[in-house]
Length: 415
Image (cartoon, rainbow, N blue to C red; front, top):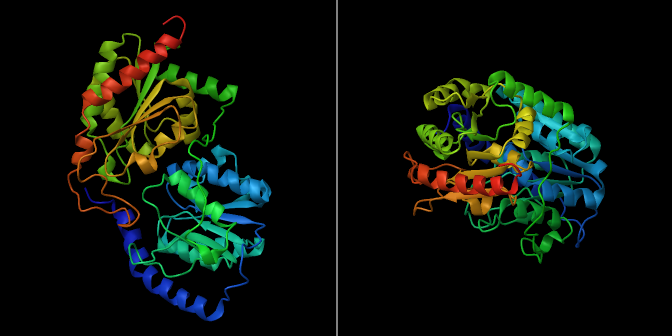
C-alpha cells in the first residue's frame, strides 16, 4: 500500500530540496541573527502554521484558544493550504481575514503563493510563529522566512528525526507519549518561557479541554433533511448511522477493508428494522462508495458520497446517531457535533490522534507492529499489508456500535 503519487512527490521534494535549503538558512541564521536578551519575549501577534490535515487543526483548538487569550483574537493568524481552509471557517475561532492560504494546484503556484504568504506575514509584523507541522522542512523554512523574533517548533536534538536545520528560537522535543492536542497547547505555552531553558519547561497540558463546537442554522438543518428525503423518501425522522469507508484516503494503510462496511451495514439493518444507513465520502469516492452501498442490497441504505459539501457533512452529523470511520478528518469533524463516533485505528495510535470528545470511541487491535507511522519516519512505513486494520473484525465494530446505539435508544423517549 504505497502512498499516492502526489504525496510521495511532496515528501521527496521536501527531502531533496528541503535539506540543503534548511542547511543554508541555518548558516544564515547563525551568522546574522542575534540571540536577543535573556528571558521571555514580548508577543503581540501570533501566527500558527498547520498546512495540511484538517483533523489535526481541530485538535489544535485548545492551543488556538490559549493564543487568543494571550494576545486577543484579532491578533491571531493561521497559515494553511488553500484546500484545508474550510475547517478553520467552521471552527469560527480565527477571524476570516486572518487566515492566510497557500495554493497547491501546481509547483509554480505553490512557490508563488508561499512567497506571497511570507510577504503578508512580514507586512502584518508577526512576532511569533508556531510551526505545528511534525518535522517537515517546508513549514520550518516558511516559519523562518516570516522574520518573526519568536519561532516555536519541533527540533531533532540527536538526529532522531528528519533533519530540518536549526531555524527555531523556541526548540521543543516532539513527545510521542503526549496527545497531539496537548503538544500543540504546550507550543503556545513555550512562548511565555525563556528560549534558553527549552526544551525543558514546567508546563502540564490540560487533560480535558472541550473541543470546538459546530452549530448549524435552522435553514441548514432543513436543507439536509430535504436532501435525505430526496435520496430516500422513506427515511422521515428515522434514526441514521453513517459509515465512512474513506476509499481515497491519503494514507492507504489506514483503510479498513471495504467489504467489511457492507457486512456491518447488513448486520445493523437486520438488528434494527427502523434504522437507515448512510454511506458518506468525498466526490472522488462517490463511485466506489455507491458500489458498496448497492452491495448491501437494502432500500434503507442511502449513498451520500459526493452529494454534500463539507459543511453539509457536519450538519448531517448533527442529524445522525453514530459515525463509523477510520482514523481520518471526519472523525475529528464529527467531534464538533453531538454524534457518537467510532474510529478505527491501525498504523497510528489513538493515544496521540484520537478525537478529544466524550462521544468518541477508538478501536485499535494493538498488534506488535502497530503503530508504524509517526513524525520521526515522516509518516512512511515499510508495511504493504495493513494487518493492524484487518485485525479489527466486523464483530468488534458491530458489538461497539450496537452497545452505543442501544444506550442512545434507552435515553430517547418513544424508542
